[in-house]
Image 1 (cartoon, one colour):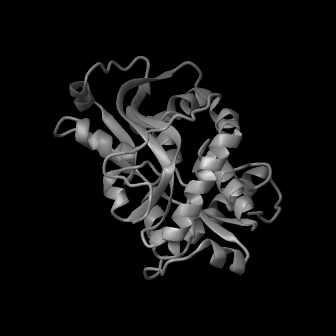
Image 2 (image 1 turned 120 degrees about the vertical axis):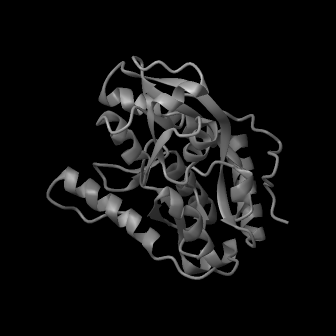
Amino acid sequence: MTFKTISSKRRQLMLGVAGLIAASTLITAPARAITSAEIKAKGKLVVGIQAANPPWGFVDSTTGQADGIDADMAKAFAKELGVPVEFAGLEVANRIPALTSGRVDVLFATMAMLPDRAKAVQYSKPYIGNSIFLVAAKSVVVKTNADMGKLVIGVPRSSTQDSDVTKNAPPGTVIRRFDNDAATIQALLSGQVQAVGGNVFYARRLNEATPNTYENKLEFTQLFNGACTRLEDKELNTVLNAFIDKIKANGELAKIQQKWTGTSMTNFPASIEGVPFVAK
């Protein structure tokens, strides 16, 4: 998606984020199933993505366009279908409603493969790994879950981090919930919270702002991310899985991962309990 050029890069970034996120507010009734042929017929693939969570999904400050791991995956899938891609920027809590309402055709939106979510959406095969940590300054002492009770902890609302911190923190722990990953990171940098529940990239992003200051304290969960379609989109799920198999085999998936993470992963679990990869 290309955004209108304006007078400064900062304003361009702000408009880009706003343009992406605006689509998430237009949630309607449940949508019917869609096929790859119908996507080709309408002439575009509409993809739900996070707009402010680098390197997963974000708006490039120079071009005003969606970028990141998930953006590259979406662009490659659209190319496979032979259509251009249109991105809709979503907050964490709006990802599934945007899909089930028909606002987007598919989610490449840092969707950790979890059994509860699999009741509402159909996952593809996994295409990248992730981990959830408690992240804090090196000076903050955290050795066990019990130590979390002494801290004010920030998390993105309705995220895996939210679930993991809530589950592992002692009763009475102060947990502050923010709209997205960027706001959660800023809360730690500004001192609103003393620790955050973060993904595998949080410590790196925090240390880019304040070098050699933050570290992972506790690891909660090893996860895998998949693309999501609606439960009834059986044909589209089949096409997605064939696409993921293809880019694993030809090396394109490894190149995307290497570009954004510095490493590559091609050995994924054959199954995840409670999360079917194939639509029934």
